[in-house]
Length: 177
Image 1 (cartoon, one colour):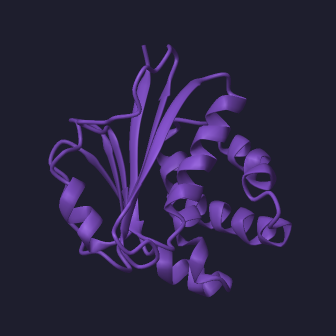
Image 2 (cartoon, helix red, strand yellow; image 1 turned 90 degrees about the vertical axis):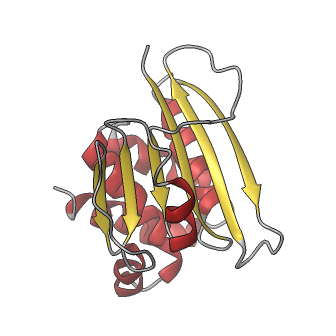
């Protein structure tokens, strides 16, 4: 059985829920089983938040993750909270724009200046998608094109953001090639 236990974490307003939804919807497109849950800090925008997404070949009975095999840390508090919980040979994506770089012990570390890249693309709020693009390119847990296919449905009602998010995915993937 292949099971990916993913935690995406950062400040409220960094698109943590959107990132989890993007991963889940792409996995569903690939006929995977999915479960997820979100957690918000006391102050939603600006407070810490996290999204857990479990992608599996078999049924998933709980969205709770004790030991993730993938963590996307978009800020320092998130990196501090989850860096020592990642399973051996797992993946850690660090947004080095807002978190200090670390050396990985028995894990694969993906370092990307996601916030800086998003700013250069013209919308700082796509840093989450830059990080997800890097993760998928490096880990191969999902087919990259499926992320692009589900963007418009995940961004329903915000179709003007589809193009910038596609560019963010591609830039994240490009920088991890």
